[in-house]
Length: 324
Image 1 (cartoon, one colour):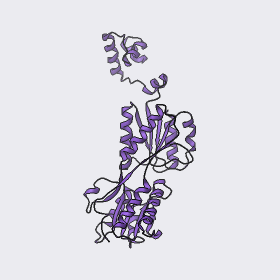
Image 2: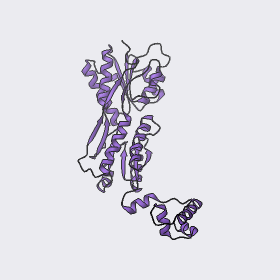
Image 3: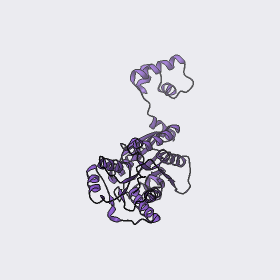
Image 4: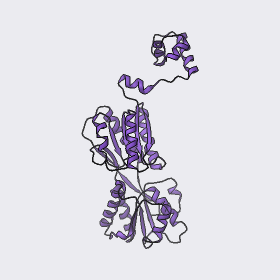
């Protein structure tokens, strides 16, 4: 601002008034200041201004597993849209399912004095963030709950979704139903396995542990699994959209394929042959609910930490309706 004032031949206070659109500056003088700003490429430090005024930095931190996954892309856009209406910007980082990386990102965002945090947890220990919460930084966990910490969370009905998938396949005559899930230490994977087990019991289908294979998975490992341990399964439930795609690649070209229900919808699923039946949920609602809960805290809500559960529904398209 000093450089702008010097170039425009005015005081720093006059520059401040122009930058903040305050009254009391002659139009000719204001234009001279604006020209100097353009010439020097001046940009005001919004974070510093907001901190000085006691209104925060105008930013939120969003820690995800992997922004490249379409699920997290939609969640991010929902958070950004709520933040935009509130006049705030979103800083985003991917933990890559690494608890150490998650902690680094969370603490880095806190060091940058974000006004609040939304976190998809990678680990199970979140006591490290309790000091920031106690100091006044609201935190909402989304998709998975935090470990060793009581905090707001917004989750999907994971168990209910896979239970419905198992019942649906049983209704079409399947008795050997397999489950391909993600790493069992991940909360969503464990909950989806629990739901699958419960759905089998509800449908009177025996739960067969030899037909359950947990991840992490790759194209190669899924192909090997479907040709080996799960080759006798007549139906398959896949635990997330990436596992579903691995399975579709492995099953491509086979004359006889198991009935398939995938958890999470994905692009072009309705255009495949047959179209893929999925357990779907409103990912936008997941991100929107997390952001709205965070802004409620920023606006002074001091009620006890809560848990919001976003429902799932079965989207029937054809792949899961193959009769045994």
